[in-house]
Length: 429
Image (cartoon, rainbow, N blue to C red; front, top):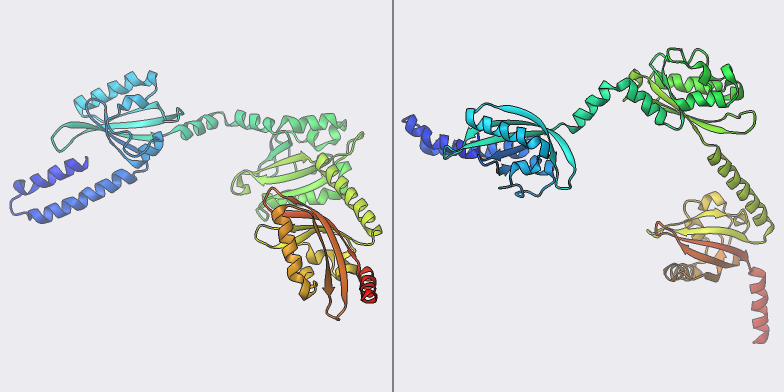
C-alpha cells in the first residue's frame, strides 16, 4: 500500500460510513500518510515501487544506498537495468505474473551497483493499486551477499579452517576449551621437522585430538625451559577467561642458529568458550635489530661520555610543546637535570635559562624551525643557588613527517671563555 492508496481510502471512508467526521478522518489520514512515509524511508531494506512498464516510480533511502545512487536518481529508470543479464528474463516473468494474478513472489538474483560492483539480493514482489486504481508492484530487496558467503563458509567450515590455518605463515595450533588440539597448520608441522628434534618437539607431538597442555606447550621444550611455566600459565589464563589474551617473547634456538619467537594466545570468539588459537611468530630479525640499536646506543653513550659537552636531540611538536628524545649524561653537569626529566617535557630545561635570555632563546629556536636553518646561540643559565653560567649551543634541524621539528645538536659550558672575554673587554675600555 502506497501513500496514495492510503489517501484514496481516507477520502472514500466517510461516504461509505455516514456520520464519520471528515476533518478528523483527514487528520488521521495525514498522520497515517506520515507514518507510511517514515516506514517507507526508514525500512531496513531496499524498497521500490515499480509501474506496469517496469520503471521505478519511487525508492527509499536504503535502496539508493544499496545501488549507490543519489536520492531520486532511480526514478523512471527501468528496474531491469540494474539486474544481471542472465537474471533479467526470470525477473521480468515474475513481475508479469505478480501483476496479472496479484500473488506475492520471491526471487534471488544479482544486481549491479553504480560502481559496477555486484551484490546478491532476495526480492519479494507484490501488487497493489495506487490512488487511481492503477496496479503497481512493490519490490522489497534484501542484500544477502554476506549471508551467502557465510553459508558457503559454514558448508566448508572444516576445510576452510584448515585452508585459513595453512595460509598463516606463523606456526599455529587451535585448541578447544579443554586444551585438546582441533587443528594445526603446515607451518607448525614443518617447524618440528626442520628443527631436527623429531618427536622431542611439541609440533611433532601436537596431533589433532591430543591434549596440548598434557605434554607441555613449549614448541621446543628443552630449549625454552626457563619460560615453561609462563607458557602454560598464559594459555590456561586465556582458556579459563581470567585473561583476554597472552603474549610472550622467548628464545627458541635450533642446533645451528639462534632464533626468537613471540607466542600469542587469542580466544576464537568473544571469549574462550570456543577455544583458542595459538601462533608462534618468528621475531628473530626484530630482536637482532633491537640488539643492534642497543649496541649502537651504547657506543654513542661511550663516545658522548668522552666529550666535554652535551650531545642531544631536541624535538618541538606542532602544538609548541618540546622534549629531548635523546640527551647524553652531560646534561647533569650542564643543566643539573637528568635525561629522564626532559625526555617527555623540556620545560624544566627552559626554566634553567636566565630570565633575561629566555625570550631570545625561544625566538631563535622558532626562527630555526620556521626557516629550517641551523641553530647557534650562546646564552646564560641561572640556577636556584644564584649560580650563572654560559652555554654555547649548535644544532642542525630537520622537519619530521608528522610536522614536528627535530634538532641534532651539541651544547657546552663556555663560562670560562666568557669570563676571559669580559675581562679583556674591561681592560680594553
